[in-house]
Length: 147
Image (cartoon, rainbow, N blue to C red; front, side, top):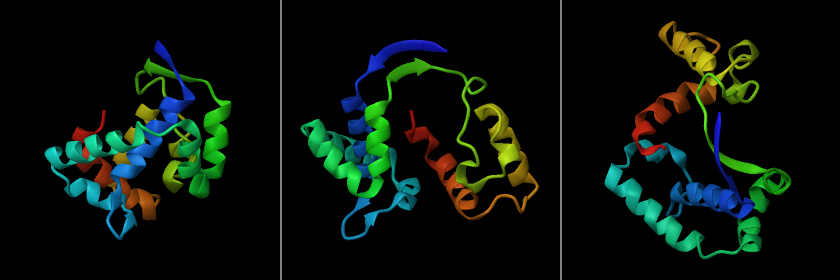
């Protein structure tokens, strides 16, 4: 892992709120499912619009936007140290049972988990249920938007 710089909690909160703001749809609330259907231009337009609004907010306003739905997240953000770093998929872990995947699939590195999930999709594994069954293919559809 190569640490590039320390990041403020304010930057972390802004990033979260901007990402959440992009998924908002008029009169529909938060809906990440439609992201896969956005063109690169539309995605970038939404990102610019979100940044214009969110980057003006101070930390207490960001906390108010985050806390109604994710109160534990605000506490975690405030009690953590944040860094921008370069890290390989072999060095990075995943959340235990991320997306309700089996524990044995998520107890290694991101690279190992990705291989197990990929094998599971190829075999149409019954271990891939609900959320990962639709969210992983959708993430792969928008991967070019991700950085």
